[in-house]
Every structure is written in structure tokens, then in C-alpha cells.
Image (cartoon, rainbow, N blue to C red; front, side, top):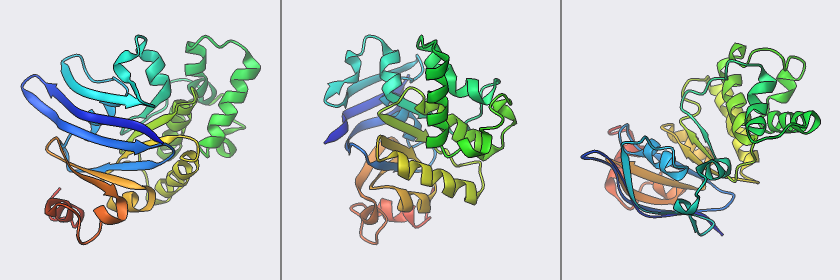
Length: 248
């Protein structure tokens, strides 16, 4: 079953084309990684998925979630509840750990304290953070370590039960041990949701992804099974050059 289908997507910022006719499909309950050098359009692609592009951006093409055009969502907040986003350098909101995760349910109108508490516990457990913070939920989220804040941000993104989770270089500022722990979290999550992960860590893509897409200067050079994209004979020689570190 295809969860995300993108057809001929263009994104422009004034005269600059950030994405040039991107077309790809992502099956449900899989992890796809998007790789490519800086400026290749990876972040613009994620923002196009849940319509968080800046006001000066113009788009054309079509993005479907479960065969429904995302432009048909009159209330964009409903779309963003279905497609969670974790930024490149996520930090906790300046409030308690509990309130960080409870923020979205409360903004959605939930008032039952017991229900909110269950959501907070569930999300922190899904993000492999519960055991570390369950006795100090009133502490400031901003006081957590970098890796803990990243997992807190994942927990916050999970609080509205998204069907798709987009992560933009989520492990760029944490140590390798913490990165591996977060990767374990993603492997568990993909049993229930679809994950789109932008990463510049080649080994991370190898470890996590069913499929990998290589972007270069706004174009989709190729997309396919990760072992083929990172193999010795990908479809395009530029893919091989990038994965071998010849540029980037």
C-alpha cells in the first residue's frame, strides 16, 4: 500500500527552483531516507509534505497521502496532525517535560487530565525516554541532554498520533551511542507509521532505510532499494560518486 505519492513536484523561492519535478512513492510502514549534499532540496521536500513551506514559496505538482491530494485539506492543521515533523536541531519547549508532550493534545482541545497523562506516558515510552524522566516530569525540558531533547521532540511529534513522521537530520548534534538509540526508536515506530528521514550519514541510511532517494541540486537522481543505491552499480554514476564521498 502506497502511503505517500509525489508527482512532478516543483518548489520555487522567487526565481530559484528548490525542487525540479520530483516524483516518488513511499509504501506504508517503511523508512525512506533522503540523501544529498546541502542545497539539494531535501528540507524543502519535507516541508512540502506537510505544507510548512515559507510564504514566498510556490509549488506545482501533486502530493497524495492515502491517494488524497494534500491540497484538499481546508484545515492545514489536520494535515499536520497526520504528518509530524522533527527539525534538524530539535530542542524542548521552555516548559516542563510533561507539558512539552501534552502541548499538542491541549491545543487540540483535550482537557481530561487522565487522558492527557496516558498520552504523555505512551509517547515518552515510544521515544524510549520514559524510564529516564518518569520521576521528574515537572523538570524543564530544556534541561535535558541533547539526545534526550531529541527524543522529547520525537515524543512531542507523536502526541497527535501521526501516520507519517518526517525527520530532518535528527541526529546531527548527538553522540554515536545516542544516535543508535534513536535509530532503535525509529525501527520500532515504523511498525505503526511511515518515516521519511533526511540524513547525511551514509551508514545511518544503510542501517535504517528500506529505500533511499538521492537528491542533487533540486533533482531526484534516483530512488530505489537502499542496498542498490549504495551498491557499486547504482543507476546513475553521480549516486556512486556521492555515496563514496567524492563530493558532498
